Image (tube, rainbow, N blue to C red; front, side, top):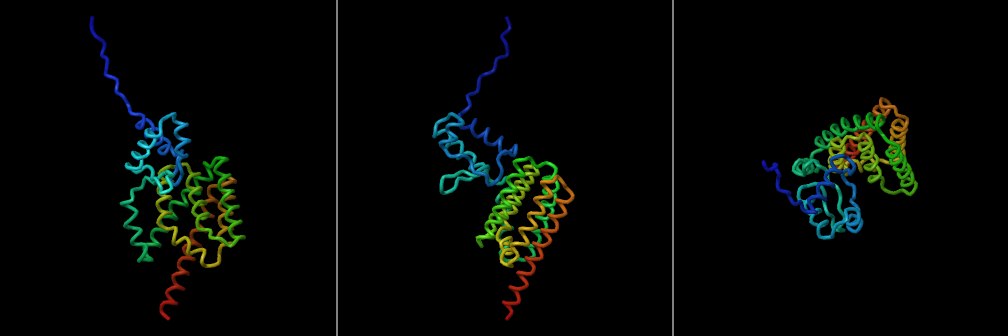
Length: 241
């Protein structure tokens, strides 16, 4: 009697199974850059695993660049764009206004695309998140607080609503580079104008109008570049006095 071609059963570590599951959610776009994973206790319950297996899995994900573990022991999803690509550009941005403008040109290309496809693909939940962000921005203006975080959240939410994980990871990395220069726009006392521009983009996406969404995004980003130019021109004139 011929023996069947049995193969040895490979034992898979529990931590490996956890890694595979979290990686799959990141690659599917269920988890986006900057998203926090649930607490250790919650994940132990979700996966039905021990604390040691979970911690081992998170250390593996941290080592291979899918997540980062913060000082407060919270675990966040990282951009899949490698830091070796981002850091040299970050250093250039400190000293070279031309590089700042070039990065914003790249951003404009990505965001024009994002707004178009967000208007086509956004779910009800995506629209809800955008609405909450616009309302939060309005509240922060009334309180005379910084809008930098709300601004980043709005643009990253549009990227997520386009439902293209590569775009989302690229946008997250670019925003990590430009967030300081975005803050320049709010030093020009034009916060209400920026809010109105965000509202126009939001309504175009909500109304499923891709061409209008792209048009409104282009108007907004052209104005952002104008504000950055104006800021640096003013700074240059003060320095030369």
